[in-house]
Amino acid sequence: MSHQVERKRVLVVGGSGYLGQHLLAALIAAGDVDVAFTHHRETPPPSLLHALPDLRAFRVDLRSGDGLHAVSASFGQPHVIVNCAAISIPRECDMDPAAAMATNVPSSLVSWLLSFGNDNTLLIHLSTDQAVYEGVKSFYKEADETSPVNMYGKSKVAAEKFIIEECSNYAILRSSIIYGPQTISPVAKSLPIQWMDSVLSQGQQVQFFNDEFRCPIYVKDMVDVVLSLMKSWLSDGKAIQVVLNVGGPDRVSRLQMAESVADVRGYSHSIIKSVSASSVLILSLNPRNQACLFTCHQNSIESV
Image (cartoon, rainbow, N blue to C red; front, top):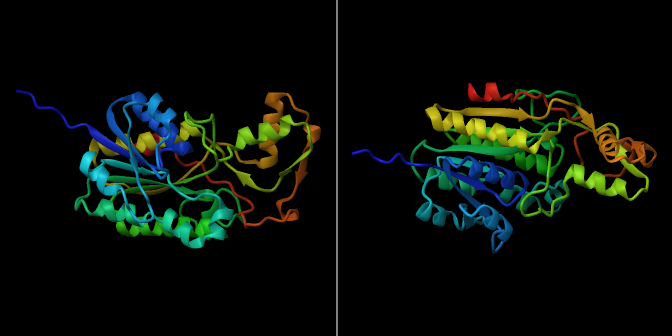
């Protein structure tokens, strides 16, 4: 008599956000794990549940942990948790530091994870290059010192330290700017390429910084990084404790991104004005010279 192999369970925290929705779609398409996600609004996005009917949705308040017991009761202990939830707008974090720390440092989530009393769950936590590094040089490596310049960065660094101290198995992904198509249920957050297309389509001159550099990563490549880590953990269960910078292969300024959008869409470069970030009054400090080293090739992930 053959016995049924237990299906693995994956919980995507903040699954109604941009990366979360793309990850959920990929997990459901693969079909080899049971998938649930958390959302903070009263109801989950109807269009997301309609498009992906096999999803389980749970309303959770990450600040207090309310709702996590329902996940335990009806879904069980996840084999993998991917934490995509955050207050990610620097200005909002500066306006309410307490809310930023309470949301971005996943203390209730980690406490819930530890309550299972075993090491059977991998926590994949999304961090950022944009705020944990000061931005005074280029091509940061994972071992470089973190030196956040704003509240958003401070909350993300605090989250990293908390996870490293408390969790047995974790992968912290310091993502660069993520770009790609809109989600099944459109997110309110401004998407970089879509925003550039929108403002340039109006034909009015727009300023873009020539001295803020990032390594943009396509959302499906970011999903592949997460899936590769997941696959490694679920296949052999070997301990994973890693911090990785995740970015695309090209170091570009916002000016160069706008010029690329203009080229593809046929807009004139004359409406693109090159300016220095230091010449513009910014309400929240941002790192100036960001460019993460692209270290997360799929092969290296699978060998972690």
